[in-house]
Image (cartoon, rainbow, N blue to C red):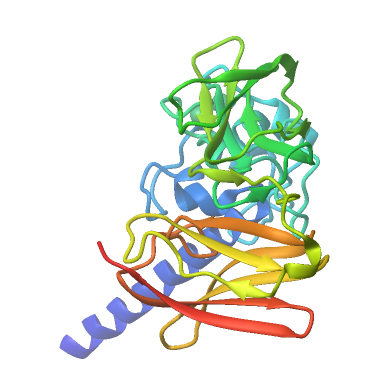
Length: 318
Ligand SMILES: [Ca+2]
Ligand SMILES: [Ca+2]
């Protein structure tokens, strides 16, 4: 009897496993399905059980074959429906308004803006995310660079700039299409406390650079013949949360400035581009290449330019 029960339980577990597997593969068949995973289609976040409005829509009308083996037919028709009745189409919620995405394609839109097409309490709002400059960059006066951002439900934006870490802001452009980029001529100033801010003209949505970036004057007063290759000690040191690294190069060359952990692991590439001769400085904001704050400890910074290479240590103390 006991053995019979055990067998029954095993069969039941196997069935449940098959059902769960059969359902979970579908999250990869809608754009950004990995964000809300099983909640896209089920009330239970772990999957299984009753389906929500989007899940019911898919189950009834948008499977290649009915039943557990059917694939989701994501496309213009399913994208145009507002399954959960929150006023936004499934495509708008999943960042693919026209239903053009197919599995294997790059994901559309920005993952931070994805909402749940099966939950009426999860719906898109106006939002902006500044992508660049986002902290740590170094520009020269009058250089042209792209200000880039991602936005959701935003038509036009205002772009502003500060050179005193937000103390005062000046307008870069009063109104421009929120198409994600604006070609900006860097002002002719010198500051290591610069930020840009992008704001929606129609709502309170805005975002600014996560951390300060730098504008550095090329040092014209220095006689090029006297210039050397030299890497300065960072200041302040120890530091928290950011520090400035100054260096000098004798001639125009490709310059790479990298931060390593004390165990030799690459933490961040601060700079990798051609620079003119003279003195330069770069701010490191204590974040790694994934934008995460790094732990306290000794870090190594290495400057490489043509045939020259120099390395120094610094200490992050929180
Ligand atoms: Ca909806
Ligand atoms: Ca929704």
